[in-house]
Image 1 (cartoon, rainbow, N blue to C red):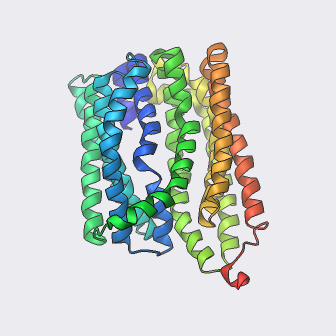
Image 2 (tube, rainbow, N blue to C red):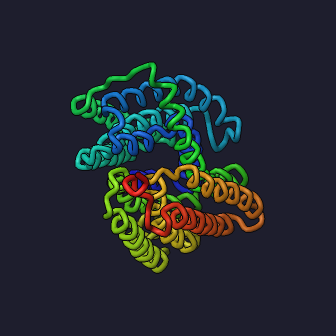
Image 3 (tube, one colour):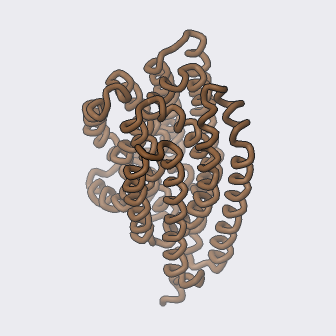
Length: 391
């Protein structure tokens, strides 16, 4: 909702600048997060260490990374294209990304403990504060930079609330001696996150740099809507990773039912979302963004297919993560990511934003095939290698 408010206020060019900047910051935030959110989600579920110690170690690592990350981003981003990524906007946005990273880490802690009611509370608080700040700024005719500061303030409050709840429920007990091993363990998740963010948002960055803020302003609404709908399968993914992990570690036979049920359920969900978005693309864009963004409807029609494949990919990724096939997941992601970048650079000038949208669909299709083959092979055609079977 907050993004819709901002888009209507700023128009095509202003929103293109805003969306492109946050897409770039999301790509660079991979270095800030360093795979620690997914690491905590899985290893917290495995009960290999107390949550206070695990979250404390992850928080200290993020703090150290922030000291390097923030100045790097502030200097580097405007060099790409100062018109699309002005320094004032980057500075405000990057600080908000740091605050959001704190909140996401605390959410991973609660997800690992299956305390999803707290996770939901933090997500609702963050979204409500963001929308409230955006509405308030609209009344004052805010600029794109002021909207960025509003977003930063909202996520700062969400991050502080998450940190408070995590300390009260788990405590923080970092051990400096653990930091090296935690960093090494989270590195594979860093690679996975980096590759995921490439094929998730690199298209908008390429459009912004090559075609400018006007075209990115038309592409961004469609891709934002599709990525927003990922919240549904992503929520199921984050719930099921610790559940399937526990079933696998304990050698529970229900892992077959959990895994196949997850794939079937998200396949049906993805198909339903794709059909709805495909059929209603034009009225959705007109209702949410207004007539100025009407060209975005053609992009959204193409991207509706992404919802089908992406939903399946969330199910397959949950299984790969839970049964310790992270290396195989990274291999599939690497192939999809490099294919995505190469094809986008090949088509962007000739076919514009419609060609970029088609590349996004192709990328998710390739990723689905890669994930699927590794899940079938790694699980022994869903027989799974139980610990008690190996003894």
